[in-house]
Picture 1 (cartoon, rainbow, N blue to C red):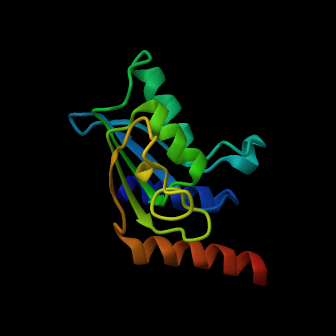
Picture 2 (spheres, rainbow, N blue to C red):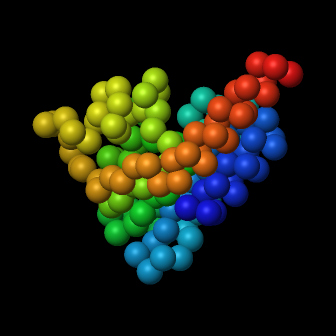
Length: 145
């Protein structure tokens, strides 16, 4: 999770919403790491989770991610949660909950749907206070600055 936080801080330094992600292989090695790049790439789908899932699948020559763990500083949005289903991510561990934009524990709760194709194991609230504080600070600074 520390790597995901480092990526979130780097994203904030670039003017991006501070969300970071890291995807670990079955042996715990880092397959991919990224922070949000939606502004830099002018791509609304360039969320940290999307970037690491895409990179990890390429690194594994197209293999699904069912034996991998995705760590992210914020509850994945519905787009990222749906992508995790299709990438077949095995575990998702996240920091802050996102009552307004989340797709795992909030909003559509994609993995709880009866028709969900794949249900990754999920654990939320890892270093939740730290993640929430980082996000609140980022948005406060943008409002006040």
